[in-house]
Image 1: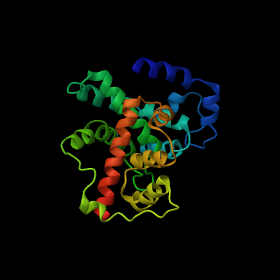
Image 2: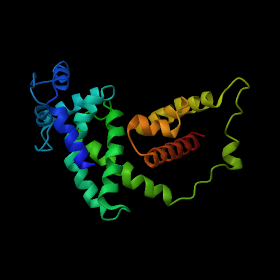
Image 3: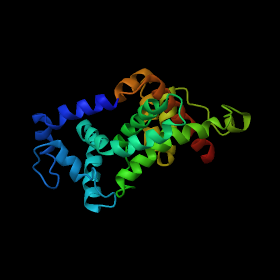
Image 4: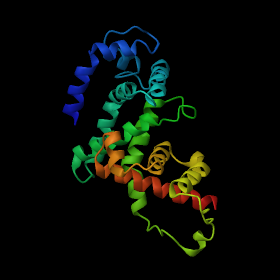
Length: 233
């Protein structure tokens, strides 16, 4: 994966279409002639406490919600700390460093695309790296510690019967509307895609991750929704 990412970045960083596109974004210190300049401006290899670089990275993350090129630049900016986490976690992960790196990068990509810019405008890099580590390695082990009871009489008593004209997707979207403020951005996105009829295979293809990772995302998203709707009830 590191070789592939490195080769991809070398091609992208000097590609004329990519440089021209970035220069239309109106970023500080524009125009640029090479995407490595964007990385440097966003804090690559610099002091993590650099507030100017943090603000620049924030502007990239803001755009990354709808722009894949911006998201790819942010991912490249985060690679050194993500690799460091993968090395540490790889020592206790089945599959070692390679598996750990695949997991954390796939989660990082999703989190970059769904970062809550309104609520977390500062310390962007550290927030993304910390969240990526949490969703890749901490949250799954927490779920494994508990046996989740899928349905019990008391919980079902709080669930209203659907109207005859309601579809399963309508019911799920209603539940998401009620719980959206308390769900993580990543899980909310996955649940919305499921409600829209996407299969887990389609989700995996869209986000460029392995099917096993997409299934993990689905399981985590449904588990969080279940927990949130029970707490509301």
